[in-house]
Amino acid sequence: MTQATLSSRRALAFALGAHVIWGSMPVYLLLVHEVPVFEYVAWRTLFTLPLCLAVIVFRGSMGELGAVLRNRRAILTLAASAGLIAVNWCLYVWAIKTDHVYAASLGYYILPLTMMLLGLVFLGERLTRRQWAAVALAGVGVAALAAGAMTTLWVSLTLALSFGTYGLLRKTVAAGPLVGLAVESMVLAPFAIGFLGWSANMGPGLAIGRDALETFGIVMGGPMTAVPLLMFAAAARAMPFTVMGFLQFLSPTVVFLIGLLVFGEDLHPAQLASFVAIWAAAAVFTWDLVRSSHRAAVRPL
Image 1 (spheres, rainbow, N blue to C red):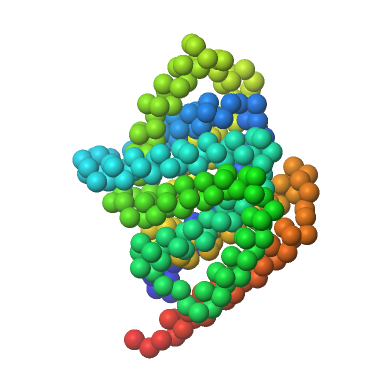
Image 2: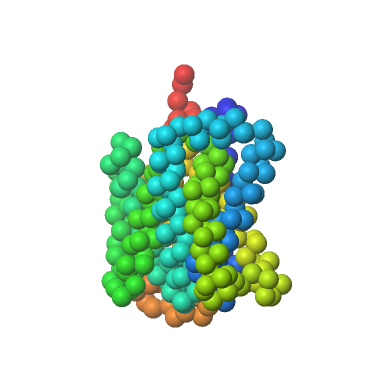
């Protein structure tokens, strides 16, 4: 087995792992349901930063961190990606807390199409005819979902655009996944500290410390943020952005099933039809990837 094959499989495993974690986030967020959105996101940022720095020190990557901090273009790109991920976090947490689980799910169903479009336009990537057919089929499914959710479509579109653009920036920035996330957390940390200081002294007070289980949920925001983002960023640097985009159909399906089975939201016929179309598209896309991979493996040198 070649190193290239190992790298491709590891990248795929990272991408799938990230989506499984993201898909299960609504259940985790039950622990912090009573925590205000901005406070939770602020703590999430602050608990992510020391975790990233500890791993950087453990891996001996301080030199890479210093190089990125001296790279003006990398800093500006990561500042932009930090702003995008902050918007995405706040809106996603708000959607779950206000029982708009399907709106969040729809956002991440729109996201794959957004990422594939970005990959085609900005990265010059190409799709095969079968992959285009899969994209068209998925587009029909997403359109059916969107037609039944016009009042919350702005939530879904903002989630898709913010995370799609975040992924594009992280693919092009001259920083590894761990160091990039650490710098993003550094950019957001002053805002998080300022908001928490205001909440403690002038605002409604802080939720952390008032309940042991809730506090545990707040602290777990660090690893629940860092682990999937690191896996996603590593996979995004190693795989075509269009392929990464199509894999995004996994996490919203998990979110949708959680909304159905855990949160008790109703399933309408249009939603069921759209999910059938989306997963038929995923099957076609995956089949084409497998065929392409097999042809590449047997092609003589």
